[in-house]
Image: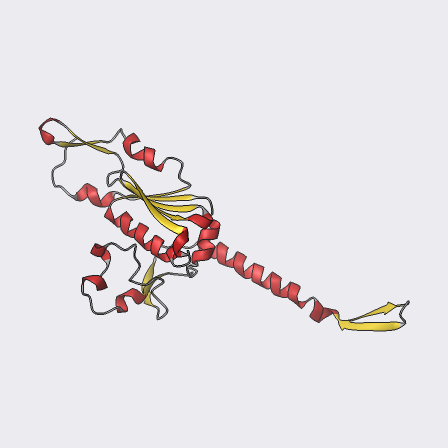
Length: 216
């Protein structure tokens, strides 16, 4: 389609192809539809059903990340190979978008993210911090400690990624004779640290199987 515009005062005609001129609108619609389709796919995706696939572009962060504890840094402990870092989880029927640290921090601006549990959750905290820390300038990030918690701060985003050590979630106290007792009806001693968090992730199953002695 050609649109002809006549400007009478200057006595000349301008012609341009309106289909080409408006093509960017169609491209924008296509991009929007792709994003919406991806979101709908993820909503219905069963992330627990899938398989590990090899991806040459992995890992998403370097094993020299300063926030990795020595116990989980395989190469620091002498492992010679690195191929194990190139595996990613792929659910059936959908794809997980590649992690974008800046996009993540932008969405989590002015928010507290806290993972609560045992060493497994600490590993998750370390991994998430390593995923985002590389896009934060050296002078604009810090780590603070408060009792059983530690927090990574991305200062420009006012975002904190926190970990709270609470392997049972509920309170574990010592009684007479130095016996340890779990109080299933008490949680405040732990909960006071995660009160006010915007995102909470819990895990505690691993510790409940540490002993073969059970009582109620």
